[in-house]
Length: 397
Ligand SMILES: *Cc1c(COP(=O)(O)O)cnc(C)c1O
Image 1 (cartoon, rainbow, N blue to C red):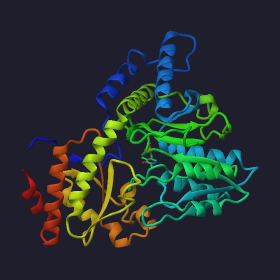
Image 2 (cartoon, rainbow, N blue to C red):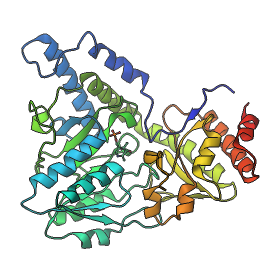
Image 3 (cartoon, rainbow, N blue to C red):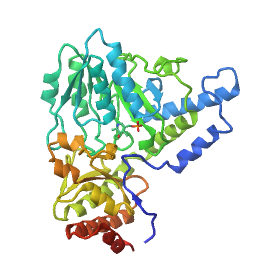
Image 4 (cartoon, helix red, strand yellow):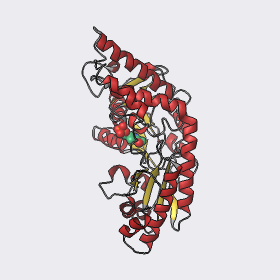
C-alpha cells in the first residue's frame, strides 16, 4: 500500500493548498509584485486587476456582490472586526449580543473582550445534538440587542445551525445577524442572499487556499451594515480594514473559491461517502459513539468518542500513521475537554475520549480503509492494556 504517512485527516484545522492555487499565486510574488493601491503605474494596475478578479470569484462562491467583500488576514480577524465593529458602531442602540456556547474561540474570546468593555453577552445553550433552540433565541432578544452571532457549521462536530430561521428571527426584531461560515463555505452551498446574512466571515486556508487571508462579507443594502474599523491606516477596503493588500494570498483565495464553485456538489458527495464509510466502520467497534447531529452537519467531519480511552492516548498511538485532532482541537495544548462537547452535555470523560476526523480533497478511499484498520487495531491494543507502540508496529504494512 503506497501513501505518505501520516495520513492527513485534520482538514478542519487547515488544508493543503491546491496546486492550481499555488500556480495562480506565484507570478504575484515576482513579476506582478505591485501594490494594489498604487494607481499611478502598471505595477499597481496589474495587482489591482488581480484583486478585482479574486474579489469576484470569492463573492460568487457565497452569493455576494464583489463590493461586499472585505479582505482580512483570516476568519479570526473578520470575526473581531464584525463583533467589535458592530459593538462600537451600534452603541447608541444597545450593547447586547447573543451568541452560542459552541462557537469557535475566535467568537467566544471576542465576546469576552466585549463584556470587559461593558457589553452584555447571552450564550445560548445547545441540545445533545448541538442545535440551538429557536424559541430560546427569540426570548433572549431585548431592546438592547444589536447582534446575533451564530456559526454556520461547527468546526468540531460539523453541526449546521438553522441559519435561515435565525436570520428571520434577527430581522423580525431589527437585529443584525453575523455568521461565522469558515467551515461551511466551500463544503456546502452557502448563499448570503437566500440566507439573509448581514455579516459573514470565512477563510482561505480551510478551502485549499493559503493561510493568512480571509474575507468578511458586509452587506451593502437592506440594511447597509456599518462597522467601526479595528485596524486604522490608509483607508483600504472602503475604510473597513486598512493595510496593503496581500495580493498573492488574495489571488490564491480567489482561485480556491473558483475551484470550490466548480466542484462543490461532486466534491461534497465524495467527501460524504468517505466520511460515512469511516464513521460506520468505527461505530462498529465496542464503546464508540457519535457526537453531534447525525444528519444536519457538514459532509466531511465525524466526531467520535471512544469509551474508556483517553483521546490523547489514542492520538498518541495513531499519530505516526494518522494526523487528526482530539476533542479539544484548537486548544490541544490545554487538557480542558472540548467546550463544544461539554455544551452538548457530553460527559467530561467522553469529551476527553473524543477524536475528530475531517476528510478533504486530497484523501483517498484507500487512506480511509487504512485508517479504519489502523484505528481498530489501536483501539483493540489499548483496550487490552498493551502499549501503543505495539499497535503501531503491528499496523505497519
Ligand atoms: C478555522 C476557524 C476559524 C479561524 O480561522 P482563521 O482563518 O484560522 O483565523 C474561525 N471559525 C471557525 C469555525 C474555524 O473553523
